[in-house]
Length: 128
Image (cartoon, rainbow, N blue to C red; front, side, top):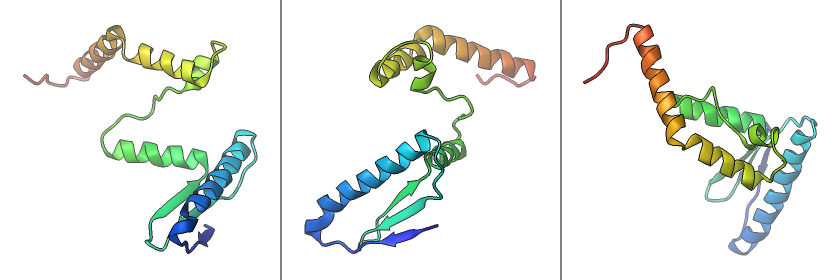
């Protein structure tokens, strides 16, 4: 892991946030184009607040791990590319399609019914 320690004065904070944003943008663009960077940078301020710039794939895996440890199912996640592979649309429009689709009563009812059916098939006992 490469660590870059930066000591900031209060007046420099806005400027460094811009620099960090630009670094982050270039790293993410590199990953999107298939370029691999051995990056897991930590930028520390004097107050020891830490900001991690990890490979986007690693960030996603870390987020999934955190959610899994909290009891969430993370093996079937939807993203805007699931919509954009079917439609010519913006990221915002794709997210709207996902939001509407995943929050429809039919979708929720189908998932809950399938959970019940599979629990029954496994011989689990229903709660009252």
